Amino acid sequence: MAKNGVPIVRFENIHKSFGSFKAVDGVSLDVPNNSFFALLGPSGCGKTTLLRMLAGFEHPTSGRILIDGEDMAGVPPNRRPVNMVFQSYAVFPHMNVRENVGYGLKVSGVPRSEIEPRVEEAIEMVKLGPFADRKPDKLSGGQRQRVALARALVKKPKLLLLDEPLSALDKKLREDMQLELVRLQQEVGISFVIVTHDQDEALSMADLIAVMNKGKVLQVAPPWDLYEEPNCRFVADFIGEMNLFESRMISAENGQARLDVKGVGLVDVPWDYPATTDVALAVRPEKMRLYREEPELGWVRLPGKVAQVAYFGDNSQVFVETEQTGRVAVLRYNQSRSREEPYRAGTQCWVAFEPSDGIVLTD
Amino acid sequence: MRRPIGPLEFTRRTWVRLWLLVVFVFLYAPIVVLVAFSFNQSRRNIVWTGFTTDWYGRALNNASLIEAFVNSIVIALISTVFSVIIGGLLALGLYRFRFPGKPVLDGASALPIVIPEICMGVALLVFYARVGWPTGLPWPLNLSSVIIGHIVFSFPFVAVVVRARMEGFDRSLEEASKDLGASEWQTFWNVTLPYMKTGLIAGALLAMTLSLDDFVITFFTSGPDTITFPVKIYSMVRQSVTPEVNAASTILILFTVALTIIALRLQKPSEGIG
Image 1 (cartoon, chains in turn purple, red):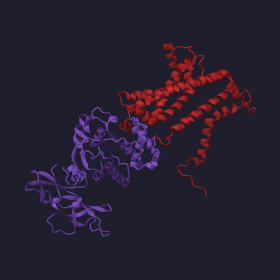
Image 2: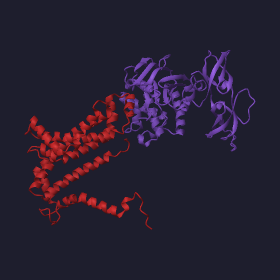
Image 3: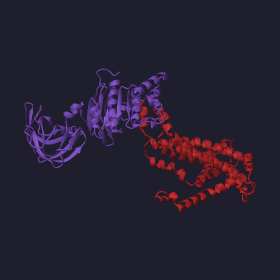
Image 4: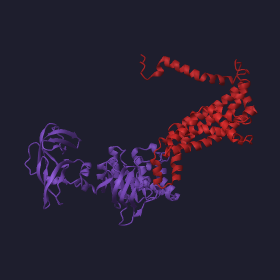
């Protein structure tokens, strides 16, 4: 069992270079006990390298990694209290499901009498009972994934690592597996660290997400905070869609800041921090509204013309070319079955948003 | 109505069929004649006088022929074992590690495949004479010079086959094994070796076939009392080509064809692996 009060993983100022390429550039990070933790970022941002360092397949160029309070320097992968689910699943092709799941216990010298019940329990946990005697080539991608999960969890690790585990599955199966992984994490009560480039996956599964770019951790926050209060342009743009308006801060006092938004004019927004100069006002597409006529609101209003509509079934992304600030994305929920879509390409319209729904980004 | 011939239906064109027939006759007529005349009653290989299996009996009762056959089998078995070990390790090393001079080693290790056998035979002969390799040792040690020669030209074939197999290997299987608590050795034994297995078996059968019917290198490296099967047949033919030679050759053909078929079968991606 994990020790109380100690984070299950602590990265202390980790650097990792491959030749002249800095894969990880000064990461300090704690993964709390019993959490579902996501490392999110575009490919090449260093998230997989961090995960592989936890497993022991890569070694930091400098810095310390503590797992459950113990320094992992010099500890080989087979002696670490962690197990990993690989992106390719890496299910042993010449062993059936039962042998795959029992492999880790067998090579660790667990007595035979103990192996069998533990293997059966793990197979039940991932609902592979009817397939226990099959070889991997007779299993679907989703089932192989379950074998990889059972094989890792049967070793009762202190930490489960998942490297892009859902990227090879189709959309429907991926959504089922997301729910399944969350259920498993709650059931076994250990921390899961998942690497993903899919923001929806991270938002829907994780309790805590670390967004990475170019080897650095930009923000560590729960999903809501990450989405509604991103701390920089990269995070704002990487998580979901975002409209960015370049602005200058003119004054800041009494929890309010006055911005001069380029092409729009003066806007007052909530602001609790010291005054700065160059900022961006960021507004999510679903916080924007469309109107046929100029609305009589105290909101920011921008006239424009619909340039393009992307239809997704449940909603549509409407791109409006505004006269003052260029292209703006607006999300419209398709709440009616009417074929009479009021906003088609070429329609004159107004875009409006409440200033307090905007986020002020300083960098 | 006949369906028109499609662009890729080559075997439906008459001239292609004829060409195929000619090719097959060219390739297999000599062998068919050889096998047919092993059942000929006449001592001479020219006129068919009647069917008999006597020559097979004669061949199997010829003590020096049997001795040569046993020599060949022993040489093939021992050289195959060593070729598989050396070739397998070479393939694994080349697959696994990056080191300076790797392309050189890679190329050099395939050299015995392309060097003309006659050159290899002469080279080995000169080498054994130069180092004063002992002769007149008791059986089977007196076969050592031939065995070494056979290992030299067959292990690169094993290495080529095993490397081709390893190209499809997912390295994360090894990582998964270690992640699950296995040591390097346990990983090799439980994960890597089972994957290599089909390549190793196919390579072994290839090495065995090559060794069994090798004439040139054996001719240069064998002493007077270490006759192998192909060399023995050659000496019999020099006197006269009797149906006994045909019978003995037919037996060897059957043996090598069987081994080759097994080798090809094993090279196919079999179920459950790959």
